[in-house]
Image 1 (cartoon, rainbow, N blue to C red):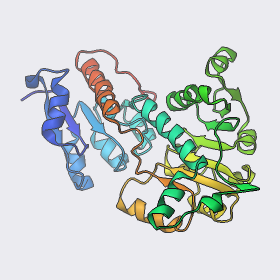
Image 2: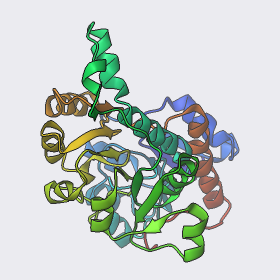
Image 3: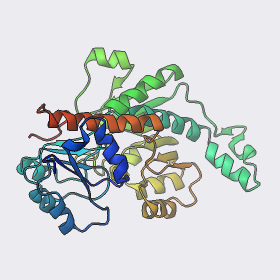
Image 4: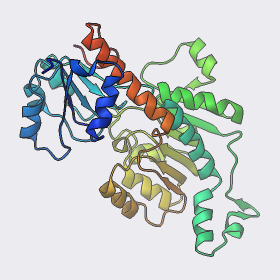
Length: 332
């Protein structure tokens, strides 16, 4: 039995995951234990004992009790960019390095964001659904003096968060002839701003000036609830909000109210993860005309999924061969 024990909390078929690790490790050099997504906390605590590496993604929250059982683990590797479902302070306290998987979904999420901008400006889904019901909304939307179908050209786009995804969005906006503002915790250098074609704005300035406000920030204690009722009230009338990040960044009840009252003209939410989330959003935004939902799948292209596997596997190989893993997000 190998001494290099890997525990996976991912739901992909076991044979599929074994094949991932075979890309970087000799099959005889590791033991892979998959834990059911329905396992109890007690079962997880037992499974992670003695693990060299633990794999996880979005889903179950990894609390202090599980991490205490995992003391001695040399790498807690996320397959996702986000790592908000782990007690990061406890992991640090127990000496467990936590790594995320940055950048793999930046291209498809950026493409999805641009698509959402165009779909919402053109009222595409509202028109499509009306026609499916046998109703034409042409006169309603392009009536003289009240034309509601808009161009992206000339608009001001505000990007909240300018990491891998936000930067890809900025680059793809260049040919559309828009003004791009951004807000992030650490401002870019003038050279970086010039290369991306972006202008730094304060958070309130970004809210007040943007025709389209798109969120590409991680979920943490700073960003949780960052877009609430007061912030939505500061946004331009008839502006559009796009959230392809995490749902807890936005107060969705406040957003629904703003859309129903006509203060905002549309929204895209790539946030529901399961049937319960989807049903909740359906109830909350029922009757809203210009709405685009996708089930947190904007990054899930075939090409991106290949990248999503490659980086974590390389990190495991680094650990196995005594090199320091990359993308560590805590101070271990």
